[in-house]
Length: 299
Length: 236
Image (cartoon, rainbow over all chains, first blue to last red; front, side, top):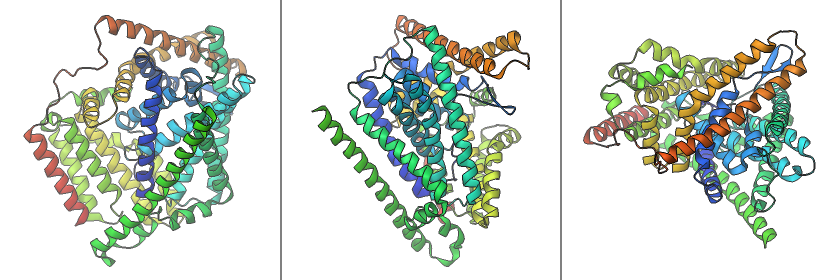
């Protein structure tokens, strides 16, 4: 699910970079408020733990094995904002050190896996964590993988990567299976952790997370809408990408010679700018709406 | 782990290793953006990009074969997607996926193989990455190999005790969950120990570099020269 560079069209990766940077900045502010300095090594080492956890295989049948992805587990154990930061750090190290996922596509990967994935993984725990803990943790693991996978797929489709309908179905089905495996792994690891020390995975904090609930609800909805759209009408997403100017298909098929460079550049820039402003507007509306809801509820 | 060799390469010395990490980050970003916005059939530009990368490898004194092979790790993924796109009848995009993702992987590898990670992160911090993220990345990288080795030990121990292939699947699943929980707990306590040890060595919330970063004239010339070349190659 790590999108490499040059898989997404320029407007898509540029706007996701533009969304992820302030989102992570906001998480740093949130985490910094209730994060003593003594927790910084903990966050780094837990990132190393998630890396190393890939070495421990879980048999899932049919001769295959899965491994922990970790977004939901981190969110339940460390809290959502620190978990977003740990996942972001992991993605940065993966992009630079292991060339796993692109550098320009880092914003897209951070958005899919660190921001939306972790918040979607925390969302059920926050809502039902106190009453139906096991079900909530399973649902968290399930949602985190499903949301990041379907967002990645939707971004690829918007960018104009043409996939046959059958393939879209197959990959969505695989995401759902992987998501169920992640849910099962997450809940069984949490149960084992409870035996070791019941303090590791605490009860969800009730007090200060109205805004977070709103944002993660939006994230889950976005992921599910992406999933439904991609499964129901992959062609619709592609044409949406083309009308919004997100797809670079046109660029690829028109030989450069037919246009003067200046013309080409400005058309491209105009489309990129239009796409970028559109997405920024949506993102701004979401954040502003979430803030307003949060303020009203806490007042 | 496969990164150890690249880490050794990054400790060598060459004109490219000596450049300030900020200059290399800037050049890398300009390179990636230029590449991403180049049409896949603009072969002159692409040849210039590839030539730049190869001369970078030669100047840095890195083994060209090893570098080119290592960046092929991207190929299985991009070839599959390329094939799908080709079957969908979009041959320029298919070509673009494969060639451009390979070139950008090689570019990132070249920067990482000429810059030790602490300096690279120092450069990122100096160019505006938040301190908290930089610190976390440094801790992550320092303890990655330690925790990974611990995971290997746990896996080996589990294989020694219950490595019979006919064990019930559910029992194996639970055993893996238990192993992961132990790894989690050990990492957690290790982090507490690390923090206490660092406090007692008067850690002030920042890792110091052995040689502080210095953006000199040479770095300026290097960055300006390569960026100018890239822009020329992009708009030619």
